[in-house]
Length: 114
Length: 113
Image 1 (cartoon, rainbow over the protein chains, first blue to last red):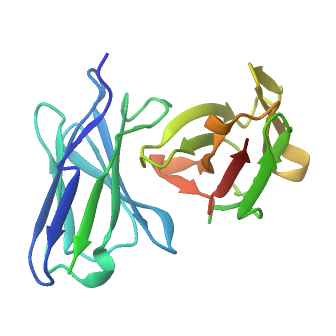
Image 2 (image 1 turned 180 degrees about the vertical axis):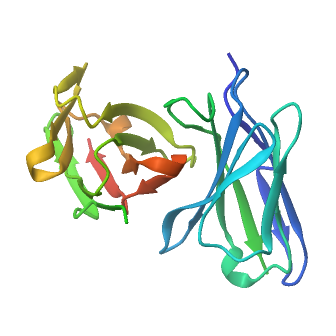
């Protein structure tokens, strides 16, 4: 069974640009989560989507946004990129709201902002 | 508010040594879940174990064992007879309501041959 997949593996952008990161969950999972792992800041929760709706949001500015598609895949958009947005962005999936399933992670997208 | 503390930033051992990674958590919720994940240099977080707050039974899986003690709010992880392939960053995490994981700072384990 395929795990969580993310694309691209690496992304290089300049300050002020927009970045789009993509995630495909494990088959049968309806929840997708996004986490940021920035140097010195640890792993921080960004967003949670389930059944196409945003269910929870971490302490990040509105320029971090996303969506979930009918096939449960998800996009994370980061607008007006800043240097401190450089980080590993990890996506996870689970069975969904109302369950207590474990979150399984993808390999991540490493975003570098120059 | 939820908090997870992994006081050991880095641990270095020689192969075949036993090593224990400490995790202390804080939450006011009575229902919660505790996790350990492993992050090798490739970056992907690999799930190792999950425990719910009502199950304090310790668990052993091969060379791995976990000690959950609610009285001290700890969920420690022991690797027996460590191997070079165990070298990674290990994260302890807590999930309460809202389905978000709160992670500790991670412990970098280096197993030397």
